[in-house]
Image (cartoon, rainbow, N blue to C red; front, side, top):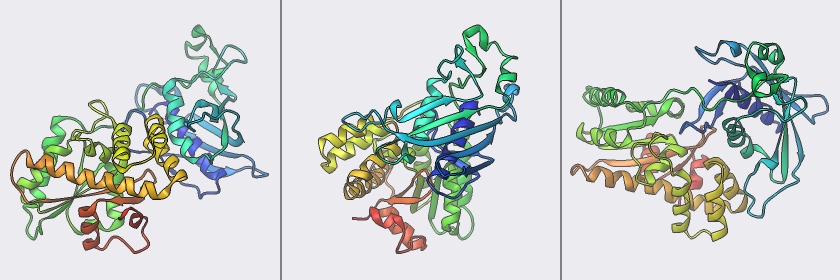
Length: 384
């Protein structure tokens, strides 16, 4: 993964420390070029003396080809600041984030601004803005203790970047599951699982490693679990062909929301439209026009959700119930294009903290049968 990813992970850990939250060695980041959260390790995080600042440390592991930053120690110090600029729609802008180039971070000329790519700024925005309390901004200082020494081994100076390493990654090095070979392997595994002695006709499809981990925590391993990639449509059809009668789709909301828009190959290179789908659901639910405008201009699904919950939690409950129900409806309609099966398709969605939050009518019924929904579960907020 590129350097900005490790900076963002430390920044998120430091911000959580400033909020008084317990330290987590694994930070789940929303990446601009990936549809679901990605786990990034952080070494430590703590509030500094006086409680006004927090510091977190991570160590860069760039993978092959980027040896110069391997093992690079990254310090990120954060503190609250007054939000000087706020637009009338309360849409997040760079004004809420004051990025300070500490020691070892390259600047555009001596004493200039930090050299930070658009990707790095978007990464920070996606992962920090949802944590920032309303009306506040965040000052973020990045320190790379070995940055100046390492920069001397690069051509940064030829491009006007001095005093350290630039945060110029243009993407995160993440593994995707979009190849036809991956689809073939998934379908073969599905057929094997459904042919096992004692198969009861129920199966859970989990999207990615985060979904698989959450499913196991919830106890969904009582029935077959199958981790899938982005080929949701063909796998749904294959499940029906294999004799599955009850199919539960468990996934990150930023992924499953695409199904509500009729997008059944969910890799971001092929289609996105998440916020557009959310805005369309908001229109159907009758949300006020000013809120719908804000949805369309939000930086991410998480930012949109935070904004809505701050203004009207009841509207959010109705909106996400409609969205989960629409995922179920559109999935059933997709299946009907290819044959007549009676397979019931349920949908359950989790947020970026891997909390099970919403389910459609079929999804809730299937989860209840499995006994994984306690009475005080947050998912109950999504029921009509």
